[in-house]
Image (cartoon, rainbow, N blue to C red; front, side):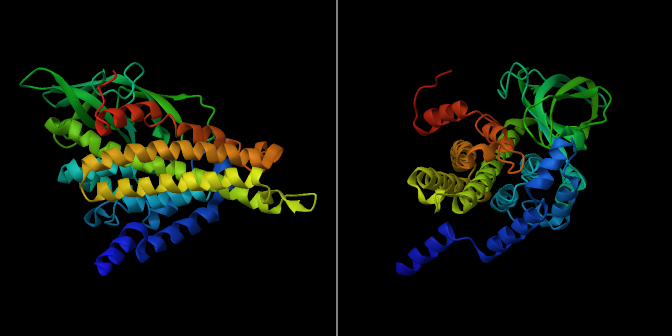
Length: 395
């Protein structure tokens, strides 16, 4: 029994040598670029392409994708390490949430062989990027009310609709669009996923002005009778909803990693400052009014990180139901912990926390996103109330 207990503790609460090595390697890459690089690119309207390409060459972008398609053959746990450590170094890559986590996971699990061979090697080495479009102006992310519809034609599909708050289209080769198609048996519309090239006739996107300091921008998308070949449909028309949820669990796991990384970065800056900033011959970190809130932030970030790791573990084992619950909880916890950590870091630095020199103020809006996107905390509370607590549906 003691041997079994020891093995469980090692596997559940200690990372393997390979994972620790990955964490160190990604952290070293992130520190070579750092927050100054990230903010300079974002404020000038440029993308962080140098970092993306180098991460691809080192095998970090496709660490979760199958080996036979150029990936690392690991899982969402390893991909969450990549995003968390880049974020902790001050340069989180939002498109890691999208291209390898959502689109890569869906295509790897449900795509045709041709689709896997076309997309996954490029996702892995950083030469191809795919955005993801589900949210609509009126429906939000409610798949039952999406108005984007794909209709069959003799040559393939015609896609019409609108999307909003779609990340990173300017650097992407295609967008995975969530629409609906007509069921031949019932006539009802059901979810379906399409790969749409960004240069397809009838596909238009317009940038949305945002207050967030980020190198990946947000866009409105207009699909006006976009003609697509038959193989633009991802996977099977009859399993669109299953495919969608297979991508949304990794999305929430990676959103949690994004938030935890930002929170860790902010907390590290605040702790360094609290150790060095001296008032009346005493470092301000010696005062409980400073130390205790920072300690609380550390605890909350670690709790969120543990739930994120649990969600990734369940997803990688193929437990989609368990992963769904854990991924939603992880995203909620990480969003809250990150927002509090950034706020407390700014407060710890006082006026310095609002200067460009320290870069913390730029994280205020970025951390706030973790409480809103890709799913709001209120919708997560609805999910937990209904699916975990078995309470009556509220909407």
